[in-house]
Length: 433
Image (cartoon, rainbow, N blue to C red; front, top):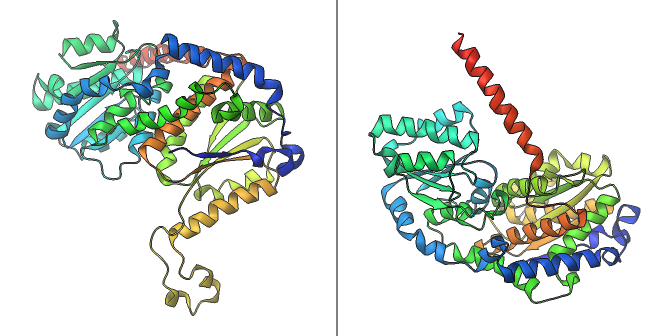
């Protein structure tokens, strides 16, 4: 399954002087072709493991027994991790309506959130998946050590070994040392796959497997995107390259904000995954567009006024799903005596959703707001793999257009250093009373 990308709502024929011309690809084609060539070479040389993930299956076999144990022995699984260690798994698992075991993604370190969770789970039937690529993420280390202490107190000294699993790089790190100390099973995180690009690895797929979902279709969907890239030299046929050129060209015309707006509730976590991927990969050396989260139909009642009548500094990507005919219908007799409600007669929730998303797309374009539409026939796990790989490749193509490295994140290190400094000051203040 693939999706249809419609960029006509971004061209000046549709949105006048707020759009771009139909030949926007021409001046960028040379750089896009270089990126295409480098991606093909990286795949052939196996120098960018991300590109091999769609075709990998052995790692699923390697964790099969662990997955069965987690499914058989536990009613609740708590995933500790933040950013790329959590968002991909959340985006994928949002398609599982009633997961068993129940999955709890704990990204933050708000103590009240942990207290609330601990009050409703049974330690004996709860396990943890702890994820940190570097093994040095302060928030994840603190989460892990607090939970180890609590579970050891509740269940005894073997609780860490029996109730925890760690995913981290196969190198010396604080998390790996602690894992070895407590004899906790360790799963290797490939050092060459960055956290925000790791959704198609076990980082994103192990929670899905524990929830009872076959992960192979996710990677098959991703492979469908990459197969296109491997089998053509024409970048105009690669949706990710076209999307990158679109964003780049609109950014040069002052569209510095990138609004991603799905209508399906199950795609809400996906937008958070996209936000990190886009912002952390592209926000460098004064480059990048700012990703904004939006949600149909909810934001039609909170953001649309700004979108239509505020600053003309945004590009919109609407993920349009098929809703028509879905859900319960309004019985005609319920509204027969209410003239203002008769438009809802015999309408289902899906019918109204279908109408709402179409109306939003058309209204944005009519108000000269550049709007790309990704049309999705249905939400399946292979589609999620397709969508994730599309945006990862689009990010890589766009980074090359900006002439920046999509895979580093140099600016965030200063904040981490300051956080450690301030923590020491807070602890000293605590000791003084």
